[in-house]
Image (cartoon, rainbow, N blue to C red; front, side, top):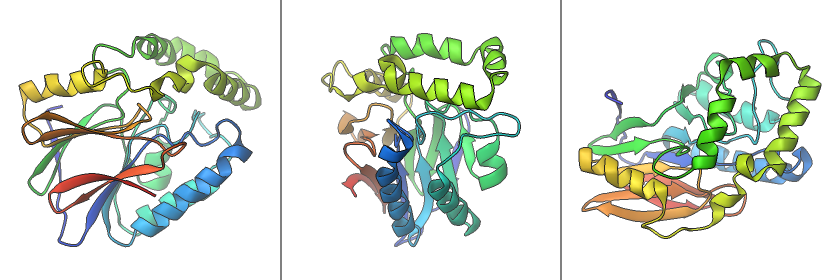
Length: 256
């Protein structure tokens, strides 16, 4: 993470962050009202957005075959395309539910996709941004799972399943398996035991950043890491409907 991405934010303009929608869970029908609410939020913020950051797990499951993507999410994908086409940059950080992204967002929506945390500066404000999965000393279950899911042979095997079988199976496992679905992520562990807090403190000891912005934990949090340094977790769009907003030099959590 040596390269720093710079975004110039003009007065009156803002940068927005959201994470963990898990569209499609527990079913497409059940998540549709949440999807409509998220699309309405996107439509609202586009008027003063300099950039939009989506920090992963937009979908509860996502896999890109060479010529096929999962059915559904038309409203979300259409709105993202509209915003991107208008010239507002969108940055997407792959989460543990959509780690099999492989070019569709870049090619079809002109969205920049990151697979690891990235350094950004907004004017003079410094940030480290990522989804948050597998960082720090904890999250051991996901770390084991990721070794399997990112294994080239396993991906090759899954690709040879017919999409009607593969996607249905993956959606079932994503909802039913706590290891994948992240249901255990919704309990606050205390500042000293939150592994993303520990990760941020270790990174802050190496280099100062004003903000550390992550998702994955499904809990809206604002925790001081050091003097003039703060960790913000974005919460989710399942229970909390929270997002973060950068304006002037400060970032704050808000609820839609």
